[in-house]
Length: 170
Image: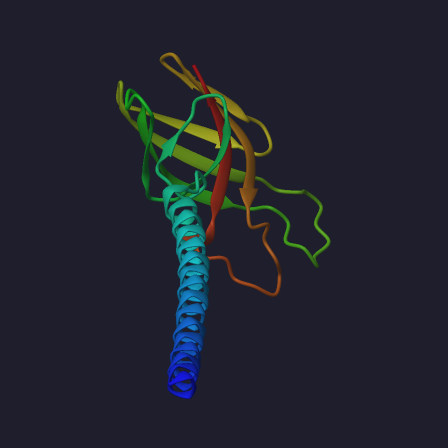
């Protein structure tokens, strides 16, 4: 009678040990899966923040809206406006007679920029890298800072490649 109970208890004890081992294994597996899930969630969150930062930033050099009083590069034949949209203009023409790099010239030449203003009043201004770097139309003063690219004897510059760096003040 005693042997039967001991064997039965030993069997139950072994079964309980197996059950506990399996339970501990599953608990560890659940903890491991939660860690993996948390790591994945952290990575997704970081990816979301990075994507949000990349797509929410606007490159002020490429937008057609500008701040008054700040330097900005403008392209030829594109309309630009300030944030209040009270000033609207385009760079309508560029003529560049500057002495190209790689050439010895008697005169340094100049780059002339023509600005067609359509708002608040219709007007045309001409700025130059040589004589007239500033011009005024109504309440707005346009200051020419630079015209790029600088001519090169070995490269032809297309009109659409030019950038005009200006500051516009009110």
